[in-house]
Length: 447
Picture 1: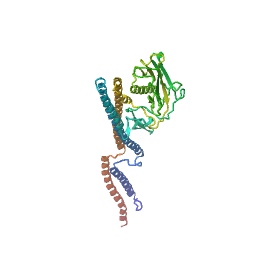
Picture 2: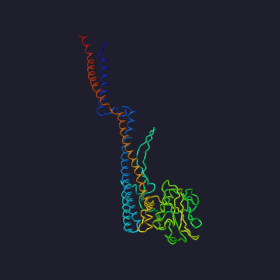
Picture 3: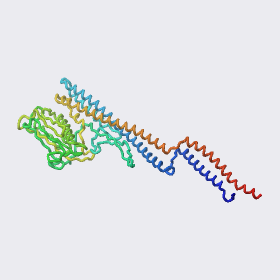
Picture 4: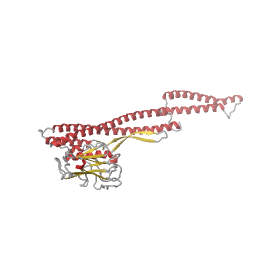
């Protein structure tokens, strides 16, 4: 049946042409934007995945910047620590020269002092963008670890956590430990620990031990971050070649700021670290005051205890050397508490005397090893940062490639589709034109 009101052929041709034009518009959009999934309406699931991955790419690009900054900071510190090692080696050569009696030790000491000042200058200048990994002077204890953002870890449930590379700050300075005058001394038997004392006399066979434990009971010590430990020593009727009872006394910060022999606890310290720190501080004091190790010495037992020894200073029952560890709290804010520099012994070296030259020779090896250990640790951190930076760069490329595989248009296929759809469009227009001419045949029935 023919009708002038309803042209089914034209409707079919029109719908076909509309579909062709719709497909042609989509292909043209792919060609102009380069994307097959441009918005959520194109493919909601793929679009959502691509957006999450795109946000991760942005995050990793920021991480690359963080790693580059960290790499530069560690690189500056590493170069400085290597320079310090070289200068310490030069100082060792001068100390060896001072062992001869027919040399001008005063001039050698002047050279050593100049090199010591140069080390302090290098340590002070070894900063990048204000961050100095070799000088924690005036830095709050809780800030003495530098964390470098290194990764973003996405769990299967979508939770994102950050990964960090921690680089411990060290102090290659020559300063002693110090704390504010307001720091409180804990009483014996308090919850924070108290005063531990031991007396060395003739009945001890020239040795006695003092423990540094963390039980918190009376007579023991509990160490927490920022706690100051002070080793106080007094002598009674002691006489030897290097000291007398009159000058053999150290003070517990009686000048209100600095104790002669002190250690500031760091986060995570155990009694072993505290004892080692007090031993290092004692060695500086002993060298500075010209006390011979045979006359009096304090040894680190390696188990959180210190052993006092005296070969020449204790001669009879009336001779005593009392040692005690006083525990003080401290303000953790920047500048209130200062840790001792690991090269504090360097400032105490004096080769102007035979005894001083011998002490310096014994001490310099430990200082060189400290500097070498610092450089080695920084080198390991630098290598890890470099490896992570290379990984993040490759990971970013892989993520970008993955996003492209999901949403980018295949331009070869789009080009072929465009040619085909343009041909279909032309045919569709012709088909619609033919369908529209069909009602005109009805006119021949009325002629």
